[in-house]
Length: 66
Image (cartoon, rainbow, N blue to C red; front, side, top):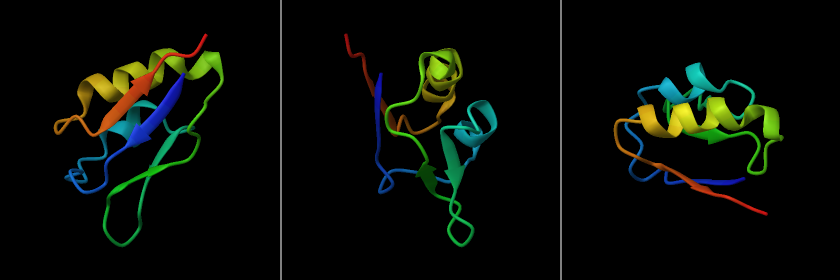
């Protein structure tokens, strides 16, 4: 899985960081999404998909690799 985020559309809700804290964080000043791992391990897949689904502005794009 490969992840891309669009910080221009991010509204700093933080649901991504709550759902998958090993993969997403928030900028201390702006609250915008910070991608910690663009190619996370398979054990993060469920949490990452949940974060992408819950994101209110759909700023997380997932690409399956295989």
